[in-house]
Length: 336
Image (cartoon, helix red, strand yellow):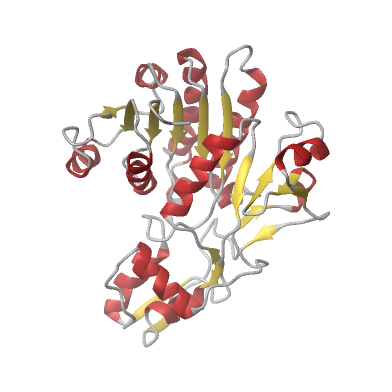
């Protein structure tokens, strides 16, 4: 699908963007790959990893999602877009709500409008577990962003473009992950835990990249793609990383959930099981779920179904977490 096509990644210098770039360049021969971000230092650093001399299809484009004219210029000749740009830190959102709204909500709308004008064929937007029944401002902005992309399928008119969303939780080793934080904290022999009963989903950057490719290839009716991935208890993670360190329980932070949610009970009437993934459908775009399941070989989820990191069927063990850290964060990792 992407062979000899042009792709743009917003937020392309972030943790996901860099890994997705690596995966895409290995898998496809692209006509053009545009890395769109507002951080010139990160672009300069990424240029060292992916130089244009070695990767002639790659281009680095400075810009801000808040500037629709700049986004429109970047989209010239682009076939597909992966939207990873966002402000993401939960505590920062509570103190800077206007900045998060400008980037995460208005930026999303700018991308929708510019993509329709530029003749883009498809957009896949990255979401977060925090957009499911949000209790913090960051999650609320991402829920609004998700709704904008899905609704764009309704007002695209005669333009040949589709929008879909991928939603997943804690990404192992990313900037927002607790794992590098714990590894650093163990140097002082004390780890801070907000609540010992907390659970989190676990997904790797490679698994996230695979999800986006799956969505690009297979979904064009406003679907939200949700992966079936394992969970871990925070104390199991602590034991895996720093079994001899002291634990300081500091209480849940403002806007933080005890368990990550990806599918709520309210989503269940429109959710189907695709085997490796769940898919949340839009009732305005898919009028008959039975027909959708017949065409896509899926089944409806049970009534009042929900999917969160606390009610998950699969939890990682200490040994499994350690192996995943070696695979995805630090190949030389060893518990203290």
